[in-house]
Image 1 (cartoon, rainbow, N blue to C red):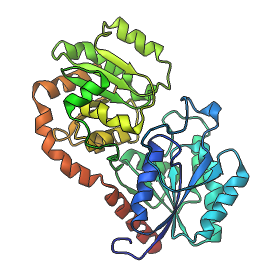
Image 2 (spheres, rainbow, N blue to C red):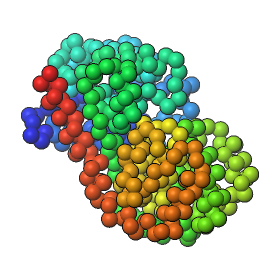
Image 3 (tube, helix red, strand yellow):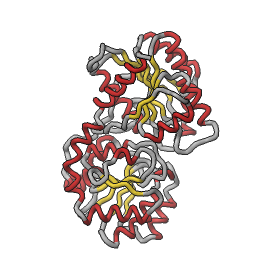
Image 4 (cartoon, one colour):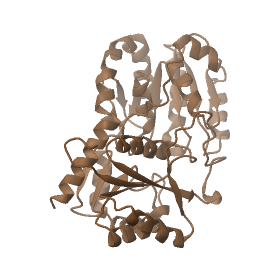
Length: 385
């Protein structure tokens, strides 16, 4: 049942298991939360990206411990007939709201068709939950595609102030709320201490920094690598880079060799299954996101779930996820010296212990319950006109 409102019926549109990755995890967590409050129909994809557009090895979650929810795999991203059928399926459910996970304009035609049918055949409010209003790496057609999809929406949830501004440029006076990305706490099992986690992943004693998630240029890994020699003049820290490379890994490996960091930087170039995530975060002291552009990031929310401080760059919504000197530090982008100084300060001044008491409050602020409350409040506002 909903909190303070009537029983609602929700249709959620977006990837969930067997697809992998942050959007799938996000959608599944929201499905679970809303299922405890009302009735939920999850409309999933039968085909997400065509293989020629996907830079990784597989789109499927091969975790031994997958995060799953019941769904109907109706949408083929390349087959318009499935978009219409999915829209009719949504309408037959008689939802109060259709909640669409939005992250890339490639899916605009499918989402526009599905939502148009669902709106025409039911009284549902259509809400787009935006992970990126526009993608990090953009083409000239992205804005037009996004506008076409957004024309079917009644309201929006964005997860950073920057995305709210981007949305306003694409669709003026659109009803929208800004709500932060909730935490990814489902990875935690409590099975590791710091020492056992290090033994499990093959790391020894000493300060350990974690860069986590797939690697693309906009994530700024090169600046973190360039910061390591400056940091190591003060702190004998190691860098662990964990995630599948969507970029060519050779330039990063060459940079490590050029800077004499072969013994200080380790690459784990693969998608990490759910059951392995805890080990890497529990083993690490500090998580670093040296991004050069961003909207928000689920990586910060994994760090918070594991009580791990983070250093983030001042781009997009990343500073909104960190409370300086409580859960991390914020530095300018493209600035290896600033990154090195922040990391050195963290270790030299003992900030791990000083920040530890603040994570419980942050977990409440970023809870899925708070996210569901925000969605319900937005639906109430849409209903009031």
